[in-house]
Length: 430
Image (cartoon, rainbow, N blue to C red; front, side, top):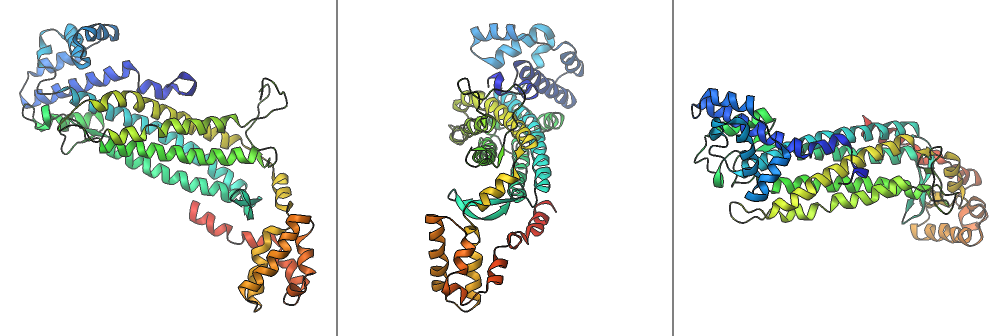
């Protein structure tokens, strides 16, 4: 992922230095376990920790000849360790190192993404309570429907991202597995204790049965989870982009001093952050199908998954981590305009209360079909002519035959729509 959309904490996980350090730790912990089993001398295991070192340039140089990255690493490691290097990697295969390393990296990346989710959730909860009863229009099909509150909008996103967090915790648990089982996964040349020991030291669970690779259904589920989170990021971003439209302008991204919106039009204040997040969501979701296609490997192992994961594992996690923190910042600094929300609520002269009138008429004994006709024909006049919907209803003989002016006035009270806001908040926030 390019630096523009990366946070240093996350990119560090995917650096060459970090990768080779994990490789070394896996090999060294495996040697410790082998020493405990009496397979290699304890002094050799200690020497491996003491002298073990690597140089990235030297590894790359060796790999240009060997065409094998793990062998290149082991060769460079041996140049530092000396004679005891013969005990490194005993009974292991490359996938033991590569797959376990990927598990470590994905688990560490997930911890950073969970921190981003926690920041976003905190922002959403704060803004939800701040605007718990800030009235705004709810829209269906992009058209004014009925009143809601901005707080309920934020509560909806809070609940969604809480589910995202739960899914990511489950995905971390599933992906954080260790396989040190040797060729075709049979432990023919290495004791299962080695796997158990390495798993414990690296903060992983053991893979119950590996074919030589950790089964890729785990990875498919992990990246599918990232894809779902990306889609939730996009949903909130699209909502903010809509609210910032000039014709709506109920809220907008914070516009800092000195910020420029357009190279050509100095007046512009564009929703660039949430547009950016909409695009980043596409990058993260792009990893989902390849991850699913990686599940079906040949027999006990092939490497058709390897090249794909080397690209999308860093990119997807780096992009999502960046997106979560960017979105959290948008929410924390979002500018809200309650007066504009109220003006939009009033724009159609009270049409948003039509369902309350419909239901009141049915309670007075009018058939639903006739009540719908009375309510709709007056609503259509407002669409065509403007004016006050309440006045139109009061002057309609069919309506006034069943509802008094005072009863109609009461039906246009916004409070009717918000009587259960506390109940919803209690469900969401406890």
